[in-house]
Length: 392
Image 1 (cartoon, rainbow, N blue to C red):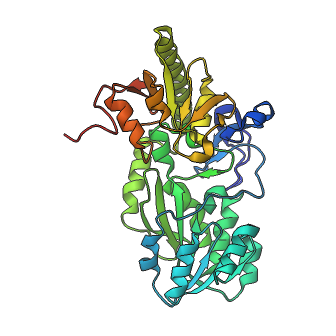
Image 2: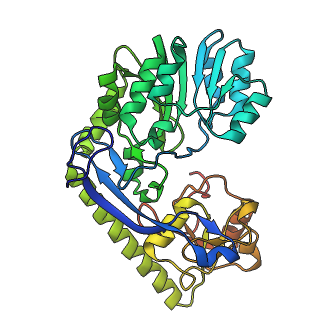
Image 3: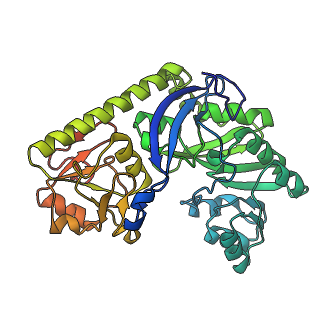
């Protein structure tokens, strides 16, 4: 205890999980291997407001990933002739379409290249990062819609960010946010989702408790991808179906410190089980490779201490990863066809649903390859079981 919550100011934040010194990049070229930069990644829980947050000094300028991967749903929702304030990281195709529909649009984008690209496409753009001061300067621009995307998760002061949202919303206006949903991450033991950039992780109860002092309520909520929710914040009554999420969070005990201490114990046990399983396979002469060279993979491999002595190589469909090495553990990254040219006995997956899967992975499995899944608990999939199994 004793750490200060970045949202509510409580000095009773509990540090519950330490992932150690992790690389700041997921992959490196050969000449960068001796220059790996690392930062300590510790997570804390505030018993007062419920915010799970990255511990340590907040980063003042954090570049959030692109927002609204499912942006096409928004074009019909927002409607024509509305005032729309779009915050950094928006898909330019979405903004162009909103302009074509007659929206009165203003795009705030602090990144110089992205702001120039938006201006070049005729999108009204100001090079600025949204905060309380910018919200006050906007003055009379009272928005019917604010497209805030993931930014609240990356804010070093979420309460001030919510205050700024409230300032720019017109009467009846709504802010649209897409945020990783903390219960989904925790119940799937996706500790690998914790990162340096993302500062804040919300339950619905926590988001509501931080928004209400600024006159904002959760007006709508719906799933958005496998691990996230899309929220509409505005003035008015709580969205009726939000009660389902609130009841589930209470049932899980997500407002209790004991839940997070137990989660940390589960993560430690998971690490030991994964090391034991892979060491046993190697002791039996089995070759192991892995799929995916993304930041979550880098977090898992470095936290668990998985090196080339346990995992021979990784495959990744992204051509930009080829010829590189997983940061911190120096495991080479190859294109997926390596699975067919030099098939390992087992292929390690972070979890059972790695996203779009290349044809080479299906062919590898059809040829007798086996899969080891790390999360939520390490296990070997039986032949025909898992993401590529035929439906019953």
